[in-house]
Amino acid sequence: MPNSEFSQVFLSRLRPLNTRISNRHIPRLESNLTSAKSAPTSFLIATNRTPRISAFSAFSDPRQTPDPPFISSKLTLEGRTASIVPAIFPLRQGLKASIPAAGDWLFSLPMETSSHSKTILDRIVDARRQSVAHRKRVLPDVALKIAVEKKAPPPRDFAGALSRAGLNVIAELKKASPSRGMLRDEYAPSALAAGLEHAGAAALSVLTEEDFFSGSLADLKDASKVTKIPILRKDFIVDPWQVWETRAAGADSFLLIAAILSDAALGELLELGRSLHMEPLLEVHSRAELGRVVAAGARIIGVNNRDLRNFEVRIETSLELIEEIPDRCVAVSESGLRTHADLNRLRDAGFDAFLIGEHLMKDAEPASALRALLEPVGGGHKVA
Image (tube, rainbow, N blue to C red):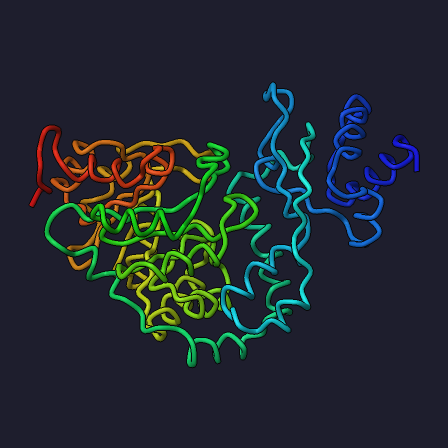
């Protein structure tokens, strides 16, 4: 098939996504497609479904971005599911083999989207709901419940780990983010987790969202195998099925984001987590959200200094809300923390723990960066 004809076929498959690609992009498209590892025509025929454009491209506007955005190679829902099932049922090769693997087909393409009214958070949650709906059909509740009963190790005490004397850091494993792009080219969760535990992390957080953060449940499972400290599943959890999935994968806690959940959903997911012996971290960014999670009975409250709607960061957000967090709750400050002085300031204000990811992941030696946060400049011991 001539390149121009193939491009038109490919473009026609993008139209259901409400995505506009101007004619000036077609030559670049042809060049990228013809250089792909496998024949592009075979790709379309084999999948017989619309490629899903995802990840960082969802937030890029070519009128403002001089370089073309990166588009994930995880083009299909089946491809993303292929990373979920082995993480929960590693020995069930028959089930694993029945799910098509994601391709390694990468390309760059400047794009314009028609959904400018949606925030970054809206787009992430929409994609997550679609992904969960598909995964629920592949792996029903009953299979997850069997995995929890027969395979999952006993959960570790996440709240207890954050309540120790001193500076309690939840060290986050995160390969990429929508706001910063790729954070680490070399991303080995097991090696990172072991190093961060040895450097003094009180707990770990592992990003498991595939489309926008390049994470997976397999990353969490790898980290859990080599560490003894509790692990938080960091994801956009909107469905009880995901809570069962979390426990089946061996996580000890999970994140609930108040901004994306109704009061009824917050209560349901909170109680389900507790029934599975996981105390979730309920995340807020405003006084209104804080009031809602307190009313729901939260025991671990995280104040995210990053506004997930526009990804702006203000440490002052934590300082403004700490007085309204009940003393009975474990208080966690999240995002934008880069120095030992930042941690001391927030601890003095009343915070029990600190979730730090980007600062560690961007460092060539994350374990060394964590030690520097835990120790004063020129000091040789952790602050008591």
